[in-house]
Length: 149
Image (cartoon, rainbow, N blue to C red):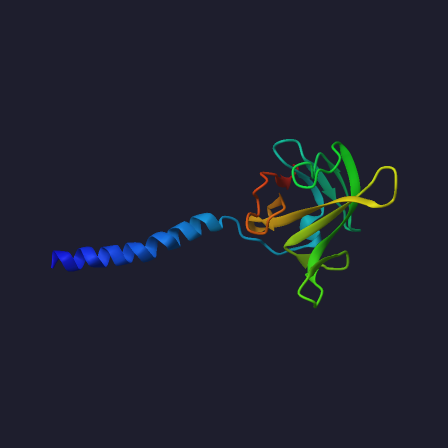
């Protein structure tokens, strides 16, 4: 009888432990947001800031340094939600009215070309925007922007 119980516990453990590890590693989940949900001023604990406007423009300070090596200091550009383009690729659209991934295109200071690109992902039910470069590690860069109060 004891052998049967121990055998059952081993089998149950072999199933439960990987599921617990998967849940622990899964971490953040994306949240869908509308333009109105993300428009406003956002700040991270290390001083990164971004202001998103309803006309899909932004200004930022020290954002993008960790993922895209964007210039430090104040920057500006355009933003949009990622949408599927029908070819299994996702593209940034300034016409999209909602989404869970945001693409930022930074303007170069000396030219009107885009100098770097940064992705933000909406998490925590829309309360947080994380700078990311890896879809498997949504907040892996440690830049978590919350609404500026």
